[in-house]
Length: 110
Image (cartoon, rainbow, N blue to C red):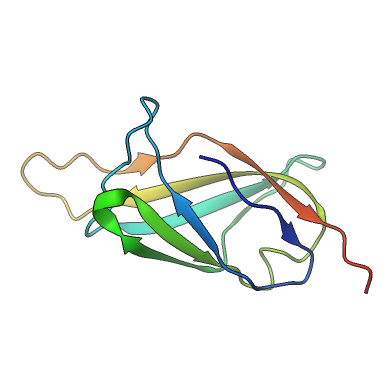
């Protein structure tokens, strides 16, 4: 799962992400609730993703990350991990977590 770079202070454009398992197949996200964490690689500080994570094609493992101002407040290199949780039921294993992915927030000139 590769993450597109963002620019500090820019909450647009949103990012479309496909959640892939280790074997390369998409994780089915139908009916899941998504959350995530961001860790600053220079300080080790971890925070929750403040933006909205919206499933756009659950069967294909696709979701959209609409950044909140806090997600892109500072330039730097970050580690990001997403978590999916489902309502417990027969055969449901919850939660699922992505592998940690590197994310860059580029410097803005203003």
